[in-house]
Length: 373
Ligand code: COA
Image (cartoon, rainbow, N blue to C red):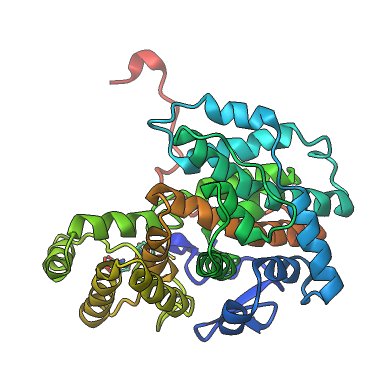
């Protein structure tokens, strides 16, 4: 048997038509992320990822309606969220458990035909934003807000989160973040989702597994940690000494580096621009300025460019969003990609079962219990 590759780096594990990273260029179904980031709504991207084509006006109108009509979550899920220890439960843990619970209230959860799976995809995508918003409100001692059927996805999410309709720039920022995070080839959580459903487990299990993988600080958890770092730094003049110290201690700088991109993450510049605009608008330029200083210093000294998580932190912070909701928002977006990959996996399935390179002892004789030292 051949030797293993740590972290499966460079291993091509499947074929996919959903998104690609070629020569540091990210595209969804062949459409460049740079075009989608400035031209598309999140609903358009969801349609694209699930149908491998851009929607017509009618198709876009239909998916918008279907999403808005399916956003309400069962009362039982809301009551469950209320039952958590709200002072300690991280919203990613709440989301993981709530999505799993949602499956128990879907009578089609274990119906595996393609049409039922598409209906479930709509329901999960619609409801995941509501779960994040409801958990946040309950935690803040407020009642959850029901979605409005006439609002778009990004707008509805902000409405359910804040209890009031959002400004255009806020909707633009969230829509852009949702578009940019929607899919990313075979990242850790997407791979997790595919491995899970390749056993022919159901779609709710696949999404629950993916959320669990996204939760880690080396994946989706990085954006929350970026804001933690910026908050610890506090003021612009402390930024470089803080980073120097971290690098001296061989600690990782969150939001920097990437397994796949060599010359930088193409999504970062869109969020950088949004961060500049929003921090200026809200009088919080220091977060942007500090981020630029860190980005330039780490690029210069370690050759590591910023990834998508780096500027999403100051974008969400300027919108007044709690820091521990950053990763759940990433999950709301990436659910569209996970669902696309799950449907693709079902469509042409084979159990995913790699091998391990054994590094333990050679075959040895069993030692009876009394003879063991
Ligand atoms: N800060 C400082 N050093 C970093 C670094 C970072 N953010 N990312 C990588 N490195 C260094 C490692 O310390 C290691 O150095 P060494 O060879 O001297 O030990 C080298 O670069 C390779 O790192 P490794 O973690 O093996 O690379 P990877 O391909 O597994 O890393 C990430 C990819 C994204 C996990 C990694 O860059 C990272 O941990 N970044 C911070 C977390 C983050 O932002 N995640 C979100 C990704 S979108």
